[in-house]
Length: 437
Image 1: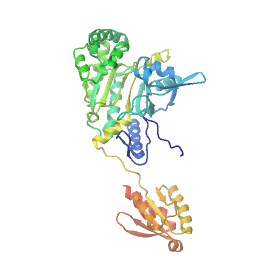
Image 2: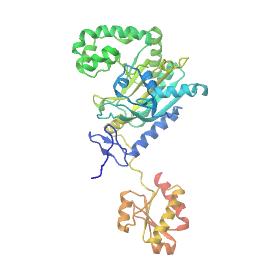
Image 3: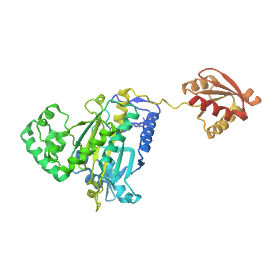
Image 4: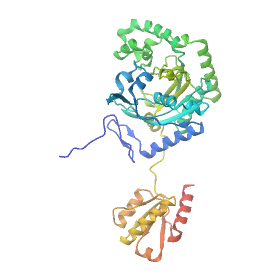
């Protein structure tokens, strides 16, 4: 028996039609992915962001240094390998690669603040679950070259605008400030001292985080651990006056924009490079794994990656798989499969040749045209035209070729019109333009 293959666990195919994967999650069709990506690009253009595309492969050291050696991503979740004494990783996130590209190509020399956005796949070797895959897709922004609080507010604003544009309204924005790394060390010490007496009550994951990076314990979703944290020291009490002032300005600008949020003193995010403002967008419709997007300021990352000068920056990343779950929960309107403007059915070999040639001419004129490529009966071709939901159908046989006229049938109304071959392109373009207005 010949071997058959399936996609690797934790990955999925994006098909022309929606389907349900083995875990019971609806996988959106390619038309919906294009729609979401087009919406992201449209909003980004309105906010004056330029697109950047970085390789899927990056140096392992870049990710380890940028994300943080003690993070779960570096410790357990990277797809890393070696070839010819060079160590590679499939990128688990895109911020560090964007900063690498910014430094490598001297994007600061373009002038002004660099407002960049991206859309692309990432990879993490974690246990697949609903909305979480080993190959997943992110979109996000990076604003590099300014420490102005308006950049923080605009980054949050463009994130919110995308979800609003897609019809996802039931969200909650959480915000906090992390302050600077030097002051944060004082907080880490205080938090560790507070948590150590509770070590036996913590989960294995939280005990490991307590040793390596106590801030990550604040990410816990376990109820009994959240109860322990209720009386824990709060990071806001350890930030400097300058950091407080920056955060106050961010809040004032968000108020001007009408962006509502809740302050969460335990919000720290999971990556080492964050400083100052941090935020996370959630959807209550997604259950325990409620995060849609998140980000913050990372003013020290460029120096960690080798820059001689600091590059103040802020950004966010959003998971597209989670976004589709939120779209499903919100029952948001999305496009169906693209339907042909015209389906041309052929009767006989001579008609097939004419239809094949004319189809290309009509496509070149700008029409979406479908035809049969199996030599099926007229009845089967008409069933296919209905299945594809074509707006108009043409039937071409010997009589039509002799008269040099085609009968153009509007499928919804059933109305028909005889059109000379010489006028076919013009008439169909006018009809389809009116149909789509």
